Length: 311
Image 1 (cartoon, rainbow, N blue to C red):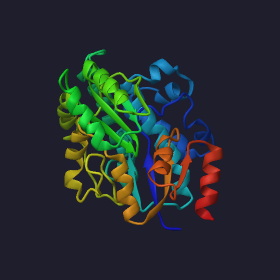
Image 2 (tube, rainbow, N blue to C red):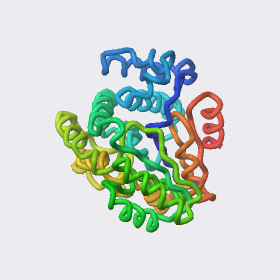
Image 3 (cartoon, rainbow, N blue to C red):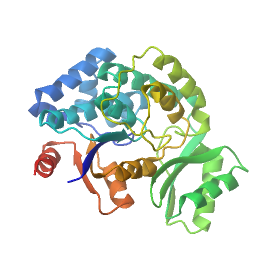
């Protein structure tokens, strides 16, 4: 087996009950939920395990909830003595990667992402921004489509997820125009996404500036595992760059495909998605069918992953 990477999911992966089964089996995972409650000052454990979808989907709740569930799911892997060679996360998930690497304490990270969620939600009034997924076109074509759609408003590529799946974000009229142009140019699908704000586009710059102020008070520790950054698709060379990269990440494109390829070039052939859902595992397989993609979100997936990794 080659090298291993742990990857952490972003917003959209959430569901009621995520992490519950693992927290019932592992005291260290249950402790993560307690630590989140104490750090946030409210019962996020209750919200995740017994709340309602509508409340969980509010961005300032979603972000700390996914981070908490992800770190809880991480605990059994660490207890089994499995540590990755690299780590990364999609958007919000990058904070999970930093917690794993030791860059941030879990408590600091969960407090920051709650504020990050609120800043991102508040940056653009509901209805003024949108996002759409464009399937079946390459990145040059999508960039060209965004340039054409700029005639009716602000728009740009938000997520380069995997070959043939790119997300765009911007003003609603411009995103609708991009969907229309993409369909005319032969996209397999071009669909609006059910999101509350146009994440990872220039309209979110005010959120990034507010996040910068919050991050000023957060202590950064040495990275013990190399972290690959969304906005560069490369390994972060120094702790000094962590905060600035996270500020930029709010309003700039997420280079997820590039991030996976960077880890592949470094010898990673096994990716373990830690936390709710299997979206990133799907992206990994589409980037290269030869890669092994595992996930940990409940007892069944944990048992399977441990069996494979411990051979």
